[in-house]
Image (cartoon, rainbow, N blue to C red; front, top):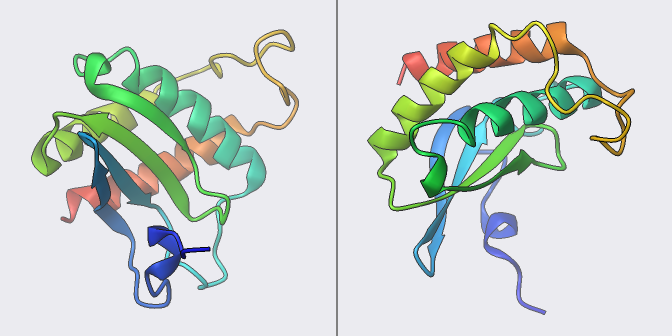
Length: 142
């Protein structure tokens, strides 16, 4: 089998930040790298799950919601993937900065009821908000 593009990148050289990972059929995959790969600092499973709920909710309710196709976590727990259509790097960067600010203001986790989530007990709002704050600082330094 062919090696998929994300496995073809040397993860030891990847840094935190925002990268265009792939563009195919008009859909751009963005690499939201919260943590440096293989550095021993990973997003906890509970925080990862909660960041997914927070940012998926904010992004899909944003002014760019029609351009947002998907938002979800990386299995390695170093970040997330955002799939969009018709958005430039600068538009995605601005959208993420705004979305991270909104996410940090949440007092409740959206979609956190048993009937809304397949693992509703595995969340950590405080840690998720902290991860959003740290990533916002990374994006603000770009």
